[in-house]
Image 1 (cartoon, one colour):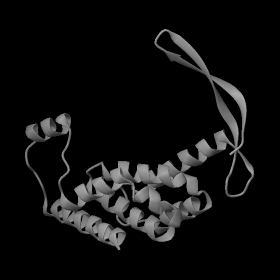
Image 2 (cartoon, one colour):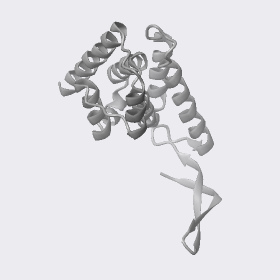
Image 3 (cartoon, rainbow, N blue to C red):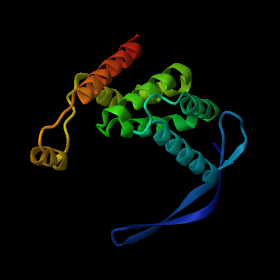
Length: 179
């Protein structure tokens, strides 16, 4: 990769100031065209925003237009797959079953339609968390546990059904990845 350095970044360590050059322009390995770093950051932020919208708790079912827009964007820019999978993992961590089902559906769509995402999805952290979702072994932090102790147990049948759907979907994705 070739870079043009135009900015200096000041890094402060303990009792020492170090200046590091930050590349302003990077050559895209696929097309060979120069790409400005700011545009890469904008694309990453836009992709993360689209993933949040596709996994919104206000959706009753997957929005296929948004999911396919995300797939198209990841196929155009394969370097965004790592960030997209990290954002999907953050959506899975919300522990809201509606958001989890939408995130699992988006994960399945990305796996099936974006070949460059397979390395990101096969990353150890994502697989480990997908196994936790599939086996229902997730644990909250100290604040989540404290909040659940203080709150009455008021689970509805619908939330239990959604939770079982999340577990089934996660297990299906793990089976699909194992093949």
